[in-house]
Length: 329
Image (cartoon, rainbow, N blue to C red):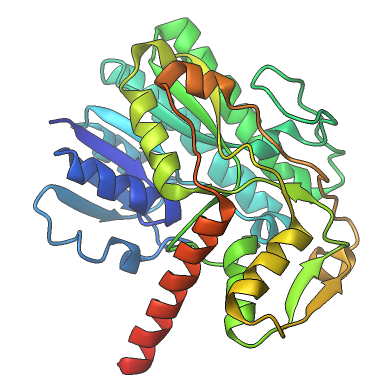
């Protein structure tokens, strides 16, 4: 049994990871300031004697030193996330995503080179024009005058830092670039497309698609993503490497909207909204984002495989259950 620190452990992915670590018999310390995470995500877990919840920010170096002191492994998921949040507050994005990561890496080394998982993002690829992105492909970030690129740039710096600590100190770091992780507990407040579409459909529509809906994305269920994280952290050969984690099945955003509508109410209509109205005049987007996940599959023997239809069924059922329980209160 290991004692694990999960930063951002009350968030969407972090809460699922916390749940799986506890189920595997580990002790877990969750650090979260609940700015985007929710304590309700840990409902049913807070009474577990193997879970310790600490409310606080990763930007507090004294608190970080305290929570890192007696843990055996670090899972660093806390970050400023979501396209809308990044576009609205790039300063917060940079401050939250860079300085605390360097502090955690240094504390991990000082504590005896504790195994370290770093959550990164497909955003680091920027506007790379390739059909499928591998972990060794070039990063094509946009101009600094466009706040949209602050998130990808900040996470790329996190990756450089983590790999530098691996090379210089032998810190066993594993880096994962997430590609549209979705599932129960995800909210649409910060630009996450599936919960936003599902909420709009359950409210009777319209489902609002930004731009022309031709953007291509892939969607992986959080359950399979968390399983991949835990397998990577249990695989010594994964140390010092970057891994794409996500589905490699492409869907257009228009097709996604149509699939949600077909499951909720075929009479719901789609509305199209220009990016300038959704995020402002200085927003840029990426037309296609599809990962090559062969490195992941070769390393742990598996990859996310659940199809989007099954994922949508799961999310819609969860959303309906949440609404029913709220109404019953």
